[in-house]
Length: 410
Image (cartoon, rainbow, N blue to C red):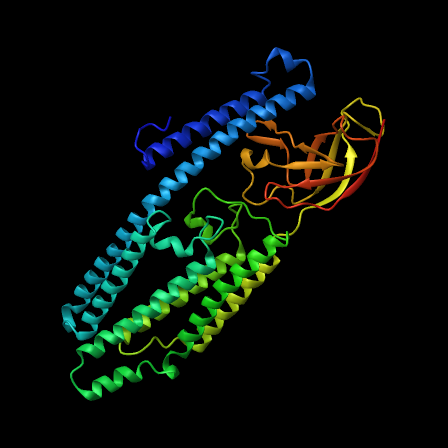
């Protein structure tokens, strides 16, 4: 169904996923228009709703399987693409050095810069081969949720840049002829000149470790909901799990990129020492990093039930909650970021007493009216004993809400 018979062909996996998505959307919109219902359930609103929900859940699971297959194939090809991009950057560096050497001639610093680029490119290519099934050289910056990590990406960029700068100095030291020149190059590694860059490097690396720990503890403590993505995307660096741009991530990436560009220009102008990042710019990066960490602490939150009422249609009389009635659960955080897909929504469960009730999918044109992030509607099954029972929502991320007591009458 993927369009070819290759075992790991990305084109076949992509085509299979595209077809599965198209079939699901067509089926969802048909059910939303009242088409495709069998006669055996068409007479009952609750039976037809349950049947439609089960059919959509099965179709959504097929789409999710195709999406995971496409993600695995895409990651397998990402290693080759990253290796090509790395060597393309080396070629661009060679061209830039050749063009700028027209007037001043070729120097030892240019040779050292090219040799350092070859060493870094070779290292990244080897890493791509060893992690070819997990995204190549990008594997270390892919988080446990299969998304690109902003903190790891920024830290990796600074690590690579500082390593390249040190290799440039080492290359010049190897090519230096006189002792005075060698002493100047060694003094270029002095902390007085590179204190700003070293401080920024230490802070961004520490933040990469800290953020991983913070996110892990918040997930285990059910204060943050995380769902796994099919594959990493470049937009993950600037957005949250739902694909919305976040201020903390955007400002951290932008300011870090600006500081890196400044440091690269300083290295190009003075290749005989570590880039002397001004303390003013270093402090700006540190403030940006602190804002990013604060944003990580502030994001998320545990889902909560605020109220539970009997769902009432037009013309119904007011009455207490009985078995067989629909109840409307109002609150916040029922749909975790990144869990808006039907296969994720179909995993939501409402625990009424000792009975687990799967939340039915109610399709509308272009999406679903149930469940939503702030309202869920589920029936009270006949197995619920009359009396005072607790209601609790279990989201698709496995996080449980608070318990809310309701009275069920005969």
